[in-house]
Amino acid sequence: MTDWIGTVFESDRGWTHLEGLVDIGNRMAGSEGEREAAELTRDALADAGARNARLESFEIQGWTRGESAILAGDTTQDCIALPRSPDDRVVAPLVDLGYGLPEDFEETDVEDAIVMVRSDVPDYYDRYLHRREKYHYAIENGAAGFVYRNHVEGCLPPTGSVGWKEEPIGPIPAVGVSSEVGARLARRFDGESVTVSVDAAIHPAESQNVHAELGPDTDERVLVTSHVDAHDIAEGAMDNGAGTAMLIEIANALATREDDLETRVEFVAFGAEEVGLVGSTRYAEDADHDSITAVVNNDGVVRDRTLSIITHGFDALRDVADEIADRYDHPIGTVPKVGPHSDHWPFVQWGVPGCHVKSIADGPGRGWGHTFADTIEKLEPRTLREQAILLTEYVVALARTELTVDHREPEAIAADLESQGLAEGMRVTGDWPYDE
Image (cartoon, rainbow, N blue to C red; front, side, top):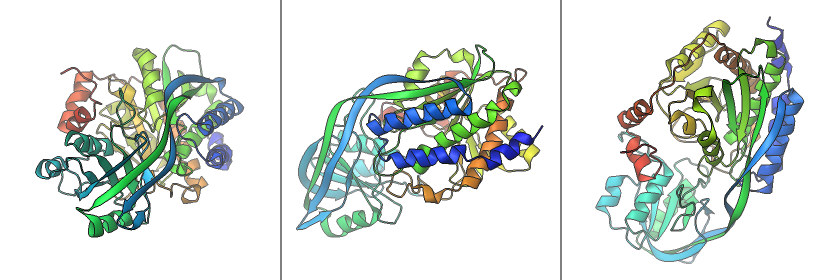
C-alpha cells in the first residue's frame, strides 16, 4: 500500500510544528523557550498518535547571554559571546593567529594575549579542528581571551559553546565575530591592546528530553531522534527546528502504518544538545544498549533536497538506505565515516548502531548555522515532505525483526576515530571516552 505517501506529501503537520518552534524565539538550553518547545513537541507527538508522550527533566549548567563588546582603539566592534564563556572583561594585545592550527600556537607567543582564530581550516590540512579544540589551545598557551572569526561572509558572527564536560564554564572570555569584523581587527589592531568584555549570567537551570512511542511493546527499539534546543541568537530553523519537525512528520506517517512496525519505535527530542550533548548523554548512560537496534538522528535535514546519512561503519544502515533509494528512485547519500558530533554520538561511541541524518550541502562548515541567518525562509515544505517519505520507509525497514544491525566493538569505533584523525582533537577537548 502506498496511500500513506500521498498523505505525507499533503501533510502540513511537520511544517506547522517548525513554524511553531521558530516563533518561540529563544530556545537556548535551560531557558523557558526550550521548555516551551519541548512541551509543544510532546503535544505534537501525542496529536500525531504516538503514545506515552512525556517530558523527562534534568539539571544543567545554565548560561544566559548579556551584552558583549570588543573595544579597539576608539572603536567598538560587534561581537557575540560564545555560550558558556565566563562573565569577564580582559584587556590585552590582540594576536591574529589565522586558522589557529596547533602549529600556529606552537610558533606564536599568545601568553596574556587575546587570540583570534578562524572557524575553518585550510584545504591542505588533514583534519577538521573544532571550535572547542582551538579554545583549548588558547588556554593551554596562556591566552587571556578568545575571538572566534567566522569564515563565512555576510556580517554573521558565529556562536557555539566552549567549556568542558566536567567544567562547563570556560576559564577565559570568548566571543564570536563576523568574517568582516575579524578582517578589520586583523588589519587595524593586530598587536594592539584591545578589550574583550562578556556579560553573562551563570546559574542552575533545567532542560528536558521529550519521549513518545509507536509500534509493538517490544524490549528492542529503534530510536528516532532530534534536538529541540537552539542557540538563542536566531530562530534555529535549520539547527535543529527542521530535525524536530521531521520527527513529528515521521511519527505522523508511522501512526497510520503502525501495523507495519515489527519493533517498537521511540521518538526522542533531546534537550541541551548545543551545550555538550547533555540530554542524549544522560539518556545513553542509563539505557540498555543491547536493546537499541538503531538510532536515526535527524540534525541538519531539509537544508538541501538530497539526504546524506553518516553510517559510522554500520554496513546494514548503509545497505538499507541504498535499498530505499533504489525503491523510490531518489538519491540518498551515505557516508561510512564516524562523526562524533550530535546526539547519535553518545550511543555510537559504545558501538550502538546509529546514523546521523542530514542534507548534502556545498562547502565546509555550518553555512547559515550558528548565526543570525538560521531562519525558516531558507527551507522548503516540499523538501521536508520528500525526506519524511524516505525516512519513514527507512525507519520501517530498520524495525523489521529479520534485519540485524550488528553492534560494533568500542575498540573498532576508537580505531576509526584514530584513522580519520579525529582522536587527537577529542583528547584535547576531553571528549575521548576510551581508556588509554
